[in-house]
Length: 264
Image 1 (cartoon, helix red, strand yellow):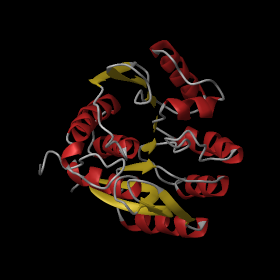
Image 2 (tube, rainbow, N blue to C red):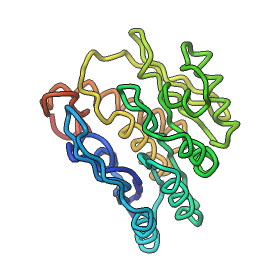
Image 3 (cartoon, rainbow, N blue to C red):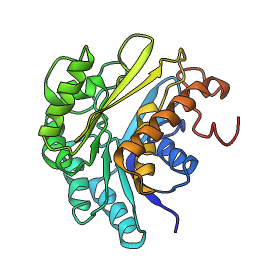
């Protein structure tokens, strides 16, 4: 039977991030994708012009419908938005026993906070303890901890360890917001793992966080260990970013090339 992963996230009408990026990632890596929408957004490569949250009751109903019928081998959680929705998702997944990858969508590329304080507290209380892997970028890790953004690899490791202490079983500290010619990520788990890649000069990086966490979930769904899934996802995403300029989608920050291994 084919492996199956479920994404719980917002919709991106431009197709580069959110549920659309998650489903493309699952498919590119040979995993069947199911989806639960938490919000509908009007956006393209230039701007987000409108956001319409899906009522929590409908989000719970979507999760129940999928889990009642389909064997889900891994769950990826992305954009949630408020405390009530976070609590709803946590409750709806209470009977789910498989791995959960939590991508805490908290800080926009502009630096704007996307989650109010009450929602941050709910995320820590209800979903961090359920996460087999938490995948924050540097601003999101700092926001979760109430600390300044990590400025060194030692800071990244220390913040990852503190997030584990808060309940996540493992933490992937993503260094994409850092500086320098090399982008370094740290998987903080029972054994730490460093992942390096040359930083690519491109503006087409829309959806990288969504795609990275979904690629990891796809690996876990297929039976990989966490280090194996993270390592494969890291290499796959690097190639997707490297191929992104060839797509020519939109006039702003375009998407990565999810199907770089399938078509040019």
